[in-house]
Image 1 (cartoon, rainbow, N blue to C red):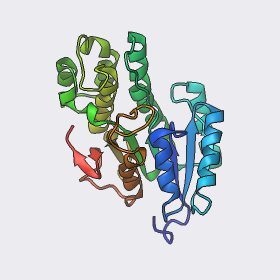
Image 2: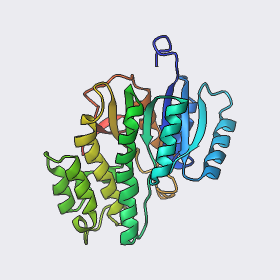
Image 3: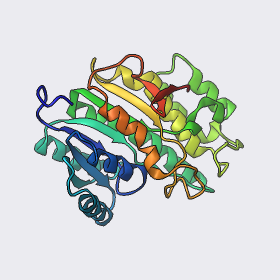
Image 4: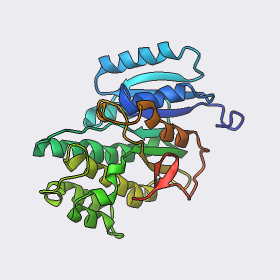
Length: 276
């Protein structure tokens, strides 16, 4: 950020950030030499306020400000209240980090549907509803996974997502048909279940085909693979510390607020473009 051209700190919303990768992203931003206004969100107010207190206590010399607001990405009332608050208090934000997600070890069909709902449908919903409040050069970052690569999906899901003519309605239909498209498929995910990898394949397709056409001419969108990190979701079996997963999203946040066609709308891992 150039303080002369933009004296107001950039405002960053991080969903699901009371723990895990979201928390680590905020931690790195608080350590940055660039000042930000960071909005930590969590479903549970007690957990959100506790995370806020810890972050402030651990970063007393930070140039940035962090505040908390309740947000449940699966609750329309919560989303509406959050967006109204953003509009009233700030008017606009500059970055949305779609981080909130779920994963199950041996999910029932209902839990698989909830995974697709949280990790895909709710990401689409929040991204599109926040667009009117996103600055003209703002960024939308969606936390994905290398497990979302097409080679990690069932043949039926892969074929559906490889269609170059796939539009928004078609992608939503693919997501609606997820259980049928992955029936009997065992994924490379360490649990073997397909809904978490599939949810990330769906968001990758959203970033690849749909979202870049919905944002403004100088707005940026990215899907991000943070790597397999030690979090509640990643488990202690993961090879990377949680803070490593925050490196690429913070790198993208701190890049100039000007669209770069070489990386816009791409899948980014370890600060480089990765294949779908």
